[in-house]
Length: 220
Image 1 (cartoon, rainbow, N blue to C red):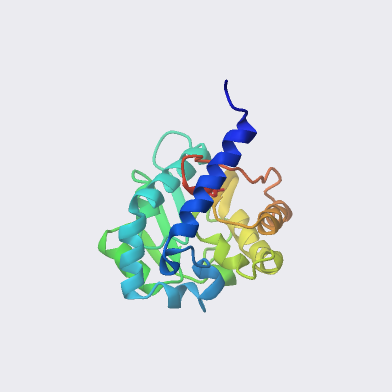
Image 2: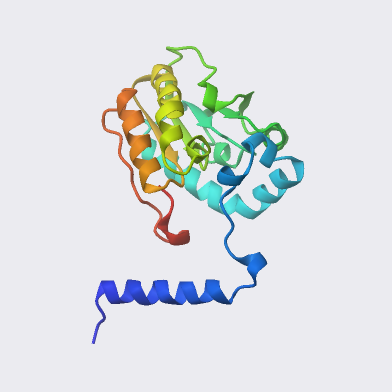
């Protein structure tokens, strides 16, 4: 007899929990870096920047490619912003377009520069966007970055920081252009991010759970 979806899901979660319990303590899940690190710049120092890039190359490229796809760009070469471009893996997904990559971590940007990942700008997104209003970007993506602006763990940080960033992005986009951001939010953070985006002018902002084959379907 076929099991119900609920039964299948329960059995999957049970097996997952059993595997976690059997891991050595050092290998069990640790709090995400945005919760425990002083800043992204401090966390992604040289050694960690290299480790993260090597360990996450496939995932970051896949997420970025999906984000670019969701932008719904018209044919031809476009001008895009990559918010929190890191070592440039997400910039690579926009090959064929002109990409402006922004990140606060200097060692990540050094890796991006080595791979010639586009025009790179050292910038703290928590302070806004160092691009002039009306620069008419054709789209913007952000991969695994915005959770750093919600690092309080309850969504309150998003209420103060994200509106400023989203407003700056909205002012930099041409009419009708989109922002697609992938992040790892708590439910409160996800709701706060959508509210902030809507308040900044992204009236159709929504949270989408995508790429179900990735870890615990947490990519949103």
